[in-house]
Length: 131
View 1 (cartoon, rainbow, N blue to C red):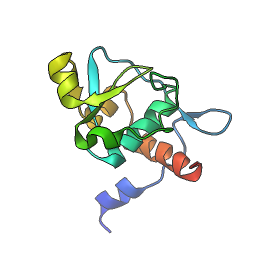
View 2: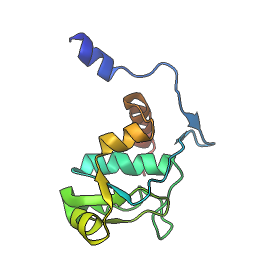
View 3: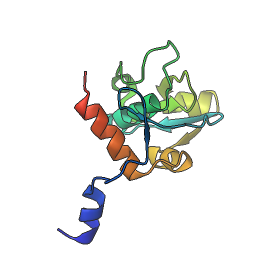
């Protein structure tokens, strides 16, 4: 195994994330005005929903982000608004109809200061506590 693979597969020894009473990672997310995140794959969508949930965000109707799977409606064209009480639509709606900026999850995580190690911790918690 080369050095690069070792680093990307490494589990952080000490968590950089705060935890709630259940041990779920807690993060602070910034709302981004007139911005939506494109989720190209089901896996990318799932991780974004885990991040939103750790940020304390909910769907517009009040459900937790990981309760429902809306990616299946638009698949790779699914975009999620970057705002608490968020919603989903297809890329065309956000970009052309209401003029939102569309960003990648990579760009979203960079803006939010979310590292790959943090994503790994979040994903691990959800795998261990799947419903």
